[in-house]
Length: 134
Image 1 (cartoon, rainbow, N blue to C red):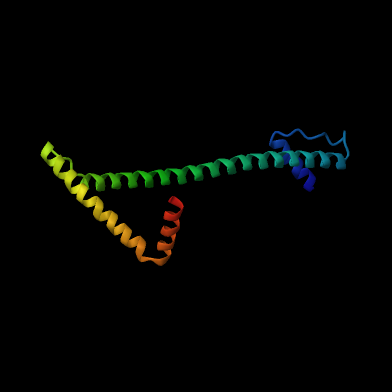
Image 2: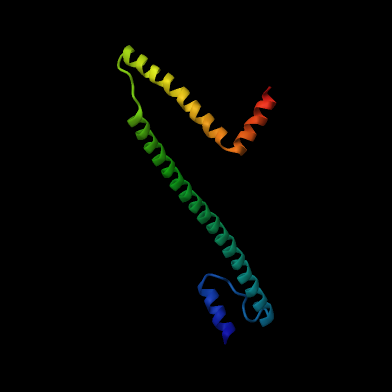
């Protein structure tokens, strides 16, 4: 009974099943099992292709999110730089900015030296560095 039901299902799905008189039940069942196995392999291949495409879509979404984040960082950095950027309008202003920079640079260097020499570990590293440089 079950075999007849399976035969009808396969016939309605377009599968041509061996005629009952030509082959015994075991041969027909074996043929049906082979057909089912072939369809299973095809479905597995199709599922693997879909899995790969889905994985690629997920990777693309992650990349797009990272790209949006980088663009946001760039825009924020540009506005911070633009807000702090002072562009001289004349030669006199440019010379004044240069003078302020020249005064600012040694102050930074002094603070850096004080910071580096305040730590014994950093001081030891500096001593070795200067020894190697000489």
